Length: 567
Image 1 (cartoon, rainbow, N blue to C red):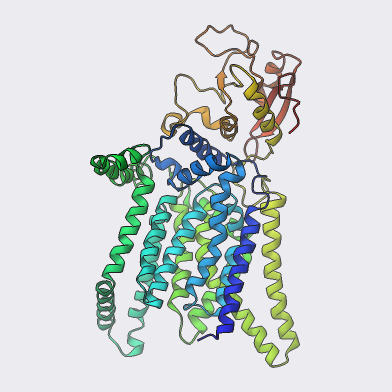
Image 2 (image 1 turned 135 degrees about the horizontal axis):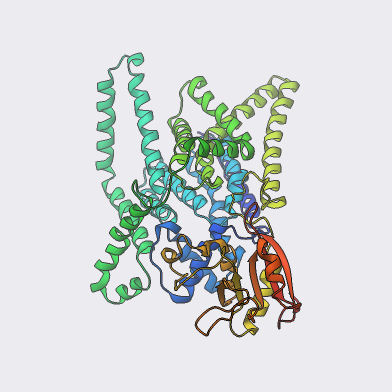
């Protein structure tokens, strides 16, 4: 049992890791231009905030960010930083979950785990990103940690809290199902190990299996009330998050409508999820598994090499060197390896964000690896081995330095650069902030169309509702990203056209030559033809709307009211 002083020191170390994590995640949070994925979700959150209407659409994942950001936009206004704030805060609190495992890890390992979760470059970068991967990871780990605390402290209230945390994980993103499967699979491997080694202990595998099943059954019975509370908390969170709006409010006022609304938020949500992400769902997963796996491994090597090395050392030390290998460390190791292997098969985009789900469990054996080095240093200190002490200190300093350098490079120095190993294709390579500022100043003073998109790349023919993800699926509307987030935020009116000079009647979009829109957006290849049909008052700025080779030109009327206003 650690002394009270050591336990307090560990708690302070965890608190320091949380504060460091918060600083790393919120400083200059709005500087990077929105990724396409951030922009499409942000656009639909703005629509939700404007109309009060929301229904679950699996293609944009869970409702957590919709509900939280809809409230935040109303309270603080819509901005890149505000939109990313929920992920940044939850990501900063992730290191605090290390404290929940304090009976399964020693003090050094708890502090190391908190530090690794705070400083890992992958977790820092994607905690500064309005996407749900860090959210589902944090809530799932919190649920696991609370369940462990329930067992260790013998307090059922932790299980109720674990159910609520797991509900938040499911509200964040549907791959919370994968986390549950990982937990079950890792537990099965621990049981298999006990069965396989039964003979070396002079036991039969049948007896070991029977004893484990009996212990699980008796535990479920003994904890039945706490488990029921946890299940109730889980479903309460899921239902409240997934039921459509404004139907939810109407049902609270008229309880007779509750059954239908609850069904829509449970059975209806499951049907929507399965039709999109199920085995025969509409979301495409036709890709090379080997290519996706190779990309994930490259990302791990480039951004988390130290964590991987420490994780391998820690797992091998626990598995083959420790006198009594701890189930929790082995559990996390199995979970990490499974995440590396499974996610390339189930993801639909080779997004580097999927590596988040391997990094989080890998941090546990990595913390053990850190403790191994610390123990070597302590041993060298006690034996007055200055060389050994210096080597241990050098390894630890190099590890911290490597994480710090990669974090600084990926999150602050080159957060949009194609050479950044964490930048995914949909990240614009240019900072569009100056033009966005101009649009925000011009749009309130302009009558009619504020932004005109020209050309096949951006034109959407016919009537469509851009507030409905289903209606813009597979259209050229997505090629405009991330601009729709910024134009909607500015309350700008947008249109698109294929005409350069042909006259348009009253029911058709205007031509480029006849437009009075102060902003015209075109693909770079159309520059010459468009330039000659716009007046000299239009000045063009060039941007890259993806990481590579998606160059656009944004023409802005320099005589439009608001153009020269100070920022």
